[in-house]
Amino acid sequence: MAKPAELASTKELIEKYIRRNGVPSIWCPGCGIGTVVGSMLRAIDHLRLRQEDVVIVTGIGCSGLIYNYLRFDGFHGTHGRALAIATGIKAANPRLHVVVPMGDGDCAAIGGNHFIHAARRNIDLTAIVINNQIYGMTGGQSSPTTVQQSRTSTAPRGHLERPFDVCELAKGAGATYIARGVTSNPIQLADLLERAMAHKGFSVVEVLSQCPVQAGRRAGRSEPWEMLQWLKGVTVSAKRGTDDVSLGKFITGELLKEDAPEWTEEYDKLIAIAGGRS
Ligand code: SF4
Image (cartoon, rainbow, N blue to C red; front, side, top):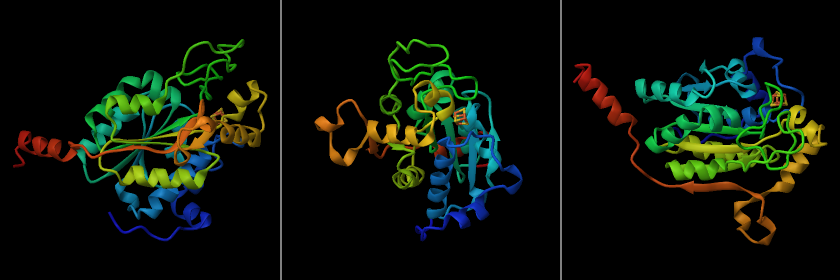
């Protein structure tokens, strides 16, 4: 991996990485997905990854459209299967940097099994879980990360079930890099994504994000700035520690980083033996 570069301007990032024929995007004004994409591009650029070495794999939902707008090779998979497809791409060509942005429903509901097994295998992929705590594209239904008492289209009187903690789930399943960012702090988010992409092994960055249209509207926060203010209020940086101030809040920052065997190159050797290449 090349030495980190100086930060590019937003204009330079747009010119280099955004497909002109893809915009305007389908995302609603004020949606957090655009902020996540911006931080992801900044991380890729700062790491000086070659565009031809990066593959973006997505599933279904609003975040599933991310790859459409970017100048990378990409794959728009089926619902919940982005990590399975990404695993195949990485196994076929270990040289590639495979980045997998997913929504919370995509990752933790229909794709939950793929998520825990990708973590268990410690395959060298980066999963970005854009957690807006709702199914946005399909009409605002509760997802596995919906906060209790929030109103959704399937829980108009308030959601009763407990939510998954995506980072704890990843930790329990064996991911070797885990971080949580928030769209109200895109600079911290870019830094966390850069660290995740530089990590050798399965890395997960959960991003608390805003869906003003489906989640915000039902919570009385339909303006994007109201959602960003809310996100700021419910998060606290890991650097502050877990004191009274942080109780009941989402901790942001790097939560886990450990070295463990990563098997992509070993799989590649086995594939070569099986295929008579060595
Ligand atoms: S429905 Fe929500 S998540 Fe989907 S684009 Fe609109 S604001 Fe974003």
